[in-house]
Image 1 (cartoon, helix red, strand yellow):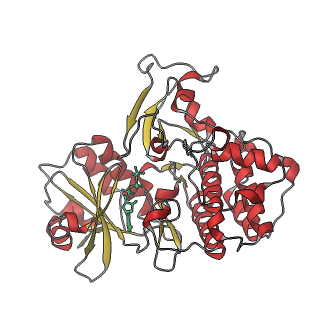
Image 2 (cartoon, rainbow, N blue to C red):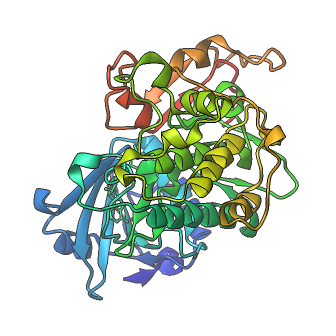
Length: 391
Ligand SMILES: Nc1ncnc2c1ncn2[C@@H]1O[C@H](COP(=O)(O)OP(=O)(O)OP(=O)(O)O)[C@@H](O)[C@H]1O
């Protein structure tokens, strides 16, 4: 294990490293550099038995490091040039980040074609596989635990948005990116899509990346990225945690398929309490649960200006601050990939080099938009919208 800032002094695969990669790495500090050999030993040669997950950019293995620490070892798929970019972004972004509700990056491995990230191993998997993937988990998510998870995620995001300089927008807040440690403390993971927003800028224009179902309308349609896009995704996640269901479920009756639409309907009928996860068997604080659902609606307002900042969300969740219900209007909703094709921004100028809509899945799940389960909506996607003018 070597400190990455010494990398340039070592003739480590310099023949196979691009000058671009060297450039990117020279700016990265505070990250340990692991040899491929150490990680191969830790994972029994990346054996199936040690594999714990598969994400959009590669496979994840569990392994014991030489120090005795358990680690989650994420091997980037070697064909993906986009993956290398995500890899470098992830290192740059999280090497400086330390917070109870953010996954800790121990270090990385850059040898030959290998790009590997080494994280703190979290014992209790992701919210997607536990809370929302009910059949595969023994974990009981009591109301207290859910409150702790919602507040923890909100604090982690508030830290990225407001305490980090430059501000960090995560861009892919969703249930599969919230991991749980042995005490069910939530940790936000997967910073590969993160974007840094310098303090003087209000937003950056970017190729859209994220997960349908969690995407803020203004970001999905014209690629305008601000912290408010994460706040929208957090609102969707908050409602998922209270209700115990995925944001999209095509197997439900038509007016219940999209969780935001359903939440709005029941809010208007003053019947929000009916949405709370029935597996709690009524063992929850109804006032608090309805407040959380209303905060979810506030976070997912169509106009980004109407969404509260994350530090305000934390205060609202813990009851330190109150909100005016008159401020809640119908949430914005992107329900279908097709929406992205047919709703261009009339003010934006098209880029002549980039006039087609190009959806590239980086996820491992079924991206067929006719899928009856609606699973496509939970995979991370990157796509270039018609009016994208950026990177
Ligand atoms: N630090 C970790 N500790 C324990 N398990 C982890 C850790 N990181 C990832 N995993 C497991 O590996 C799986 C894949 O993670 P990864 O971040 O690569 O993709 P994802 O977020 O599920 O999907 P996508 O990249 O398409 O958004 C996770 O769902 C989780 O089960």
